Length: 129
Image (cartoon, rainbow, N blue to C red):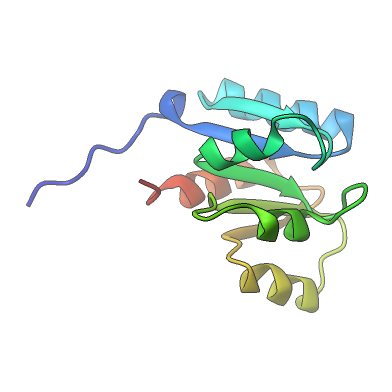
């Protein structure tokens, strides 16, 4: 049985949607050092965000964003949507249920370890064609 070749991180594009500049830059730097190609956005209304996110193999998105929540933005994306790793400072069981309901692969509570984010992105991109 032949297995499909798994893409290298350098072939994997991850979009980042985080309004906190320091955290956005840290996530982008961490993923870049790990070999992922990235593009970061501060708002769901940024130019070219929908085009970039729909080309991504994974989206890392904050839950609380200006204007619209991360899950609401994700739900509005055209299908097929990339796997998403949500990050939040406000983790509740109802929030976990809500993000699971829209197809989230992961939910990390801030502050999180860089290794946890890398593992979540790895799991999210593992089976994406």
